[in-house]
Every structure is written in structure tokens, then in C-alpha cells.
Length: 81
Image (cartoon, rainbow, N blue to C red; front, top):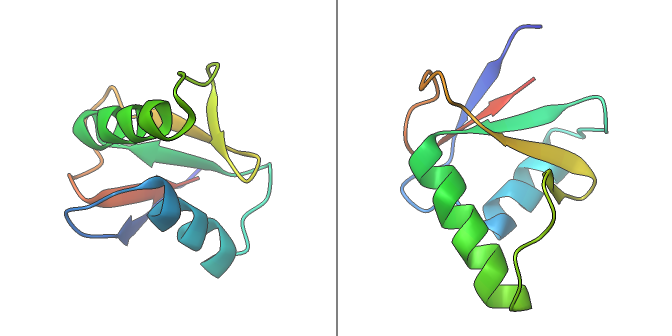
């Protein structure tokens, strides 16, 4: 499946990811891919917000968020599959 890139900026956050899901009308057939640094930022934000780490896979509005271990997704960008 082809990956679309959506530039977010330096602050990839849970809210930014929610906005992408809404803007692009994504459904559970889609996935969000994050640069490892952005993924770690979102994990920490989620842990601080809910005072616990969410079970893997991490999701936002039912959409799975995955770390791009291949490092093809640039920092500050979300890959949408």
C-alpha cells in the first residue's frame, strides 16, 4: 500500500494526529506511521496525559499508530497508509 506524507511541523502530538484523522476522514483500514523520535514523543505525551502507557498498538480515534523502523518518514511528518 502506498504511503501518503502529511507534514505537521516540529510538534507532532496526539491532538495533531486527531486532526489528521478527521481532516483526511481516515478509518480503521488506515494506519499512521511516525518517525521514531515523533513516535516516542507521542508515547510520552500519552503517558503523561493518562498517567499510564497505553497498550500497544497505540491508537488515536481507532487508527493504529506505528513507529517507522525503516526511518523513511521524516521528522515532523505523518505517513498515512
